[in-house]
Image 1 (cartoon, rainbow, N blue to C red):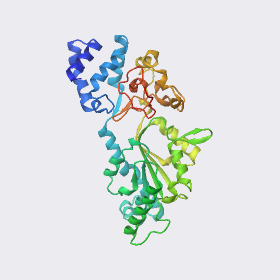
Image 2: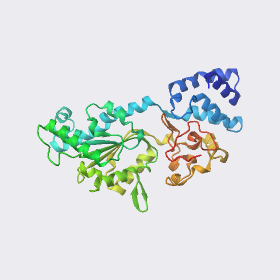
Image 3: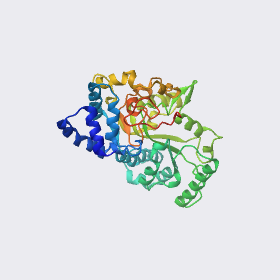
Image 4: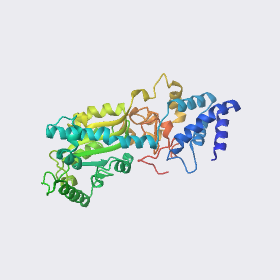
Length: 370
């Protein structure tokens, strides 16, 4: 829809006069141009203002529409491509490199503040090459991470955490080849294995997708990876030092609820120190949509007319609460440029398969065929 038609539709939905249209147009156009139009899950040809108009139209009454519009204007958090890319590129120098420097300092006896000496040490150079970087999802932006860190070999970065037997052998072969060049000799059996695994992902709101207890056993992505790293029959046995491997979990963005949960559960369920979790940007608890600040909009969220009970399926049950307020009751107002997390309010991300319209419709991993 052309911008003029979308703005006319919005004005009609909101019953705005000429003065109100003039007051709101510049702000909405800037929001759309600067961020919201880049949302990747809009229907072909659709942009933010059209989506906003159609989303607001479903609310009955001017009072409800005004409350929804004000909430979007003042409470929505949209993480653009540029912002996420900034976090991806800053992850290595701010989180990973200090971790590697500390490990090298522990081995050499040098103070961690002696950065130049540590970076030039064999201990650090070995540590750097003996660290494997794996994506936890397609949101890990592994391509950007790879390009932003030329000091890392392309052969130690992989977009997923599953390997074929052939790929595992290939990783070991290339590690040996690189270490031989750096050391001027063939590496020993111990040296020719990865000593650390760094897991990368873009966002978590609850942490339960990564780690939770099911049937009295640890479950979730991190639990499965850690079990494989220790399993002598897994593909990791080919090229990882399973007896001494260390884990580092890097999240570009995480809600405080998720950080607190994971820091408590990692020691309890996997025996890992909470320090293995590092977050580039933590969303404070003040981001949560709560009364009294969000009372008017929460009335719409609670209204049965604006909810689809089909979304409360077996996948939602993992979080322990209704998806009305987001997975695991996260109550977030967050939208990522490539998709809206299901930890955000359902009214934000309802998809085409649901009976109501979402402002930023989400494409789910667990789709229902309609």
